[in-house]
Amino acid sequence: MTFAEFVAVCFWPVVILFAILFVIVKEQAVFRFVAVWAVGIGILYLGLWVFYSQSSIIAVVDAYVLAGVLGFAIIRHGYDRWGKDKRGHSPQPWKERLAVIGLLVIGAGLVWTSASTLFSDFFRPRLVLEGRVDSLRTRGRRPEHFANIAGRTVKVTTPVYERLKFKPYVRAEVGQGSNYVFEIEYLAN
Image 1: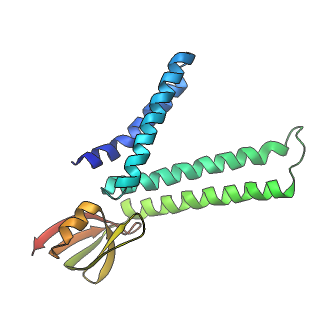
Image 2 (image 1 turned 30 degrees about the vertical axis):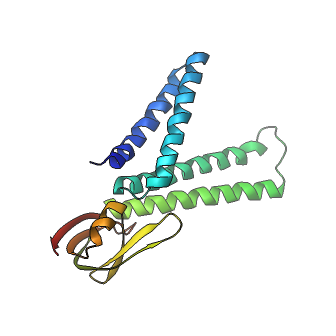
Image 3 (image 1 turned 135 degrees about the vertical axis):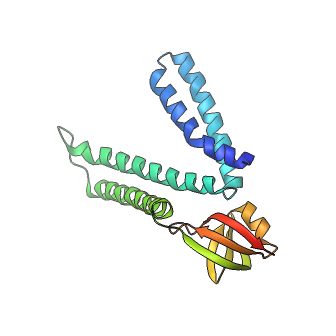
């Protein structure tokens, strides 16, 4: 396990730990101490994610899970704003109601995209490709790595991309949702 994979694996336990600490801690001085640590670790994780987001398949899965969690948070915020015209509050103007509907649609889109991708990756059988690697390339400002294996374009993480530069003959298992190579076996050169 590389350091990048270790950091990616630790992301959700750290988030859960800080969420529990925020709920448990009642003393203001301790709460501020925990908040400073949470912000510091959050900035560290954000920086690592910006520079090493393609470093492991675990980091890719973390990004999809984080998109789903953010989608639920956006839906919750939109639902809370939607309910402001109930019980004694004045009705919302149509522009504000339209903004709330937009929030709900964006949140639902994030949840749907991440959930369908993760479902297809982990609960549907993986696509097995066997063949020579061709046409290695990167795209975007934060480069995504692509390779053709047995005539099909797939996404690969940075360490796999570096090993594929030798254009070996491989057997790869590809997730059907994200189109990332989850497991790869190098058969010949």
